[in-house]
Length: 213
Image (cartoon, rainbow, N blue to C red):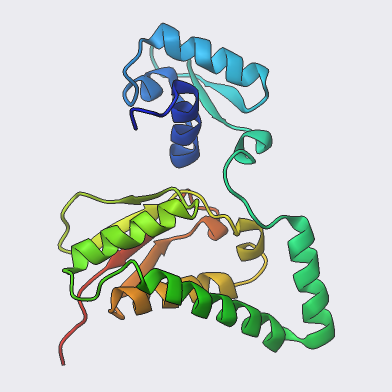
């Protein structure tokens, strides 16, 4: 955890990333005792930012797992709410699907210009991906670079989606994000293997060097 991050915020971020953790699971990531973890959980539960469920075990005591409530999820950046979705629906009904596509394509072009200022094509692929992760982190996506080496390529994850409400309704934002990543990373070998909009805990991408023909 970042040194300047409060334990409270660290717990909330861990639950956002992992969806559900027990006291011992949280303690593994925090430099505090289980009793200290429980004190924070009691406060967060009192604020209705988290809730718990008890799971019986084949042996030993039941285990209590904690996860974010709807209010807890609202703490994280989410720039587009139901009103934005309703506006897009109105545009779709009055102007058709092409108008929606145009809106997201224009957004992608604007973002591409900003991203290209911070991602350098002359750098190795790993560095380009790390630069992209930094940009996404700054934009509220809770992005993390996967340090583990893999024969399948370089990977990173995004644990928050600021446009989740829209991505849940339209496919175009996810398509544009994928195309944006391909463009700024300089390779067509970018694959989204998990997706928040599909109910998974993160948007995970695997990136490979461009194949030489």
